Image (tube, rainbow, N blue to C red):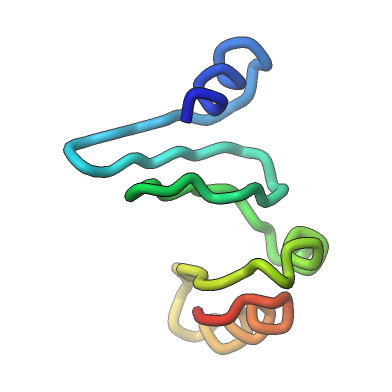
Length: 90
């Protein structure tokens, strides 16, 4: 989490680290995936549909669960894209 804060302060990265009692949320506008911080921490990054395969492919052997927020009509299509990219559970 300290690296997130340093990147925002010195590298002029867009993003923020929010925390509450027992949780943390870090968001960044970088599209590349990175190892997830542990201990009740969620990291949010954008993943445009056109870039999804490029973003996920290098992490295929490490991917686990993915949360997906989309209109109900788009869920099947986007779920297939995520599963094809290497995500185990949507």
